Image (cartoon, rainbow, N blue to C red; front, side):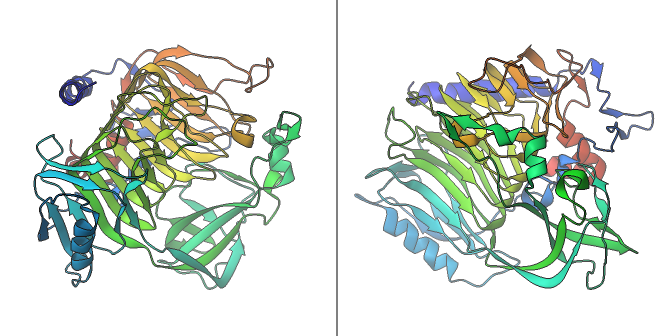
Length: 513
């Protein structure tokens, strides 16, 4: 597919998204709906679990406009390798003082920049800007050996304090914002806390993950602890309220009494207010397996409050990896002119951080995962109004991620899977819990029910599938929750409705709606 065709597809996709926004909902979800006061009403499970408020996903916890960053250094293309010229400009801006959290932007003038090595941002308040994402804009042409085009990386570290206790509630439901501690001495509003749940033998057995075997060899699912971080908003007696909902439940029956620990922590080294925007990344056309050298577009880690917006990407593999926090990926379009090879598929969008928003992104390509997660990922993570064309899947990928919303996404020739991957990939097992597909369209859904958890497909169109764990013929695993299937529900977007209710219409406008 040539570049003109890619631009045409992007335009058609934008039109389709616009039409999708205007589709009137016909049905009503029993799990989330607008009540007579026009407020969101939530149904809970018998134990109090609910679909969480996903609106905290994105830059600055959602609803904040990405800033326009003033240009401090301008770069023009030169013959040969441009990596050093761009990197020197970034380093020059990185040495400037912070002004309202920003240092400034490096602007790439229109033209083609051949780059043989990664470009790195490692300082807060620095942005790499292009002069347009089209063919006549700013084009970073990846040359040389396979590499990552751009890396944005802080050196984030956390340190535990001596203030530590355990959760006192026998059961804390998914979606909760408060819970009781055994002792609140030493804790205060504003503290950052780490909540750690142990991976116990009892829980692994409940999940059926103690029986994973592949080629006669035992596979290990999850070990150690699963942690997530929150900020304390208030403390009333022994009840703590945190800044955004929990994506998982905590059950002392399987985790043990006093099994879930809460510790205050200090953090350092993360960078913020940084990103890339308005440019084009082009890699050589390659049909490769994921075990070969890969050209990749962006790695972002050790970042809090970052973004990637208005970027066109051609022919990268495992294109974008976000393991940072509070990041928005907005209007990013990826095209693969040839498919990858092999049964093991790459993931174009790796969302393995917390509070991530992928908004109005498109991918066109075959034999890939459009979106996947890593191990022990605690969201919320939101895919909003994204369109993925070709033979591929939205599929959280391994070892218990929680808190995913797929909202108004289109996968017309592929699938959306909330599933047990079993012994695939050396024991990926249950990949996701507490996930929601809302008003989506896909060719197929594999929505399975993890023990002690839930996954929802609500107001979606497409064919439900029933399958056993991979490599097994039977038994067929229990289905997750289907609600108002093949009938769109109101509100048309769950994320935007939650955002509007929490922060008002201006927050929705800041998100681009």
